[in-house]
Length: 413
Image 1 (cartoon, rainbow, N blue to C red):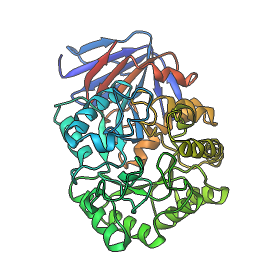
Image 2 (cartoon, rainbow, N blue to C red):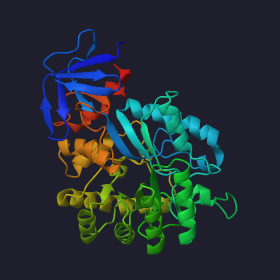
Image 3 (tube, rainbow, N blue to C red):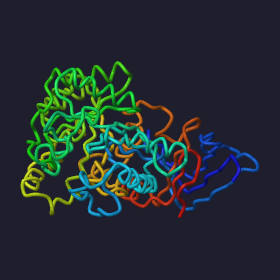
Image 4 (cartoon, rainbow, N blue to C red):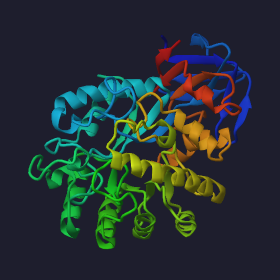
């Protein structure tokens, strides 16, 4: 193929306005979009006619963990023993499969939001991104969090998912378990030193971990403030796992940039988020997509209590105008089913056009980039194609027929 490629299709979507334009002609030079619907196309360009498809910018998943789940866990929840059976090498090889699956599903940028497994202190997601950037394996662009910062017994403490006995799996400060202001500062500095592009915080209890109440605040206000201060001084944004209202409020006050889940937020707390410009990544399709049938009874009970409330919270947040970005919490939702989160956003009250914006423009704003998220000259040539009109039927995004990342075609039906 020449360095210039012309993509032709029946339609393309301006995700900022929600307008569908027809036909679609997009010129790609090297790894950038150089023109959209130009009067003339460059002579000698390689032409790719996609027929009756709709072109969109590559989608983004702001809450994913590529290092767990995958081909041997088709229902989403990983083998509960993965935390003590998978070594870092096997886990990274698993991640290469999940990365390719995610890219072929149309998601060209993701946040790998917090390792919560024992790695010996290696930031496996940072290394995975390096391998992808160098073209060794296929996968999306990754904003890596390294290890999630969690207190002892917190939701993202690696020993909490298997309910391990004391001393079975020691976890180091480098692997994210940190208590008190000096330790959390040191743990954040370690993640940043070795390549983390975002800091993940375990700020409240969770649904699928033992021994934690989903709504309980886990880090003190002082610890949260120290984590955010340490990250922000390095120019790194923060994201907090937080279901409970108290934990969410504490995070907003501390200056956390993004709340993951936000399931039990009160109206006043949602207003705080709106006023502060705090993003919400609701991971709402978990309500339908997470198979808890084989989970422990206590975890099934938490899911039954939290998920219905989470759906109602998201409906309120949408109506209020809270900034909402798309994230799945895969592999809780199986890798490759990422687009079902957009269906959930529409089901909770967004229009399809708003859901598309959450997975493109708003997600780009969340990770503070302006080089992607739209089909426009000068932006990265991350482009996908689906049948039909996704502004009328959001489920068309579950049938991605074409993927171009960085100007290179990686999937074509």
